[in-house]
Length: 195
Image (tube, rainbow, N blue to C red; front, side, top):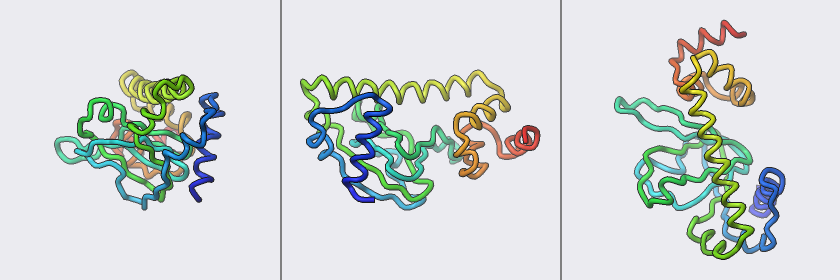
């Protein structure tokens, strides 16, 4: 995939998902650079200060934490056409407490947040789009947290199958178990019961 194709893909997502068309698209698009990540490569390491937002043109990324005993705990998965904005670290200029890793080869568009903010200064179109993106990130996180806090293991797994059927086929069971707050053994039992 080349840079112009990835930028057009981003433009299409803005049109379709966020119902937004930027009149200064070329200037805005010029802020984004194309990068590739190999499977297993990290975009963000714990302790990094995030400066970019990320649009996934191709591939699959996960956000995970490392607990006190060194176990990896998945917070979320992001795939083609998703945007990742490490909001807390960008707003406070604080180090990330999590990792962002490619689970398969990825091509992403990255844009410096400060450059986008400068470009968007006094630009109502960009401010509206930025607000819609932040709402989208918040809603995705809030939805997952509600499912994890309110549902039992079976309910969480059924929700995952409904919301992310393609990931259920693609991801190893231990990754799904970590995301749902289950042990791999518990998830295996649930899979046998449901299927």
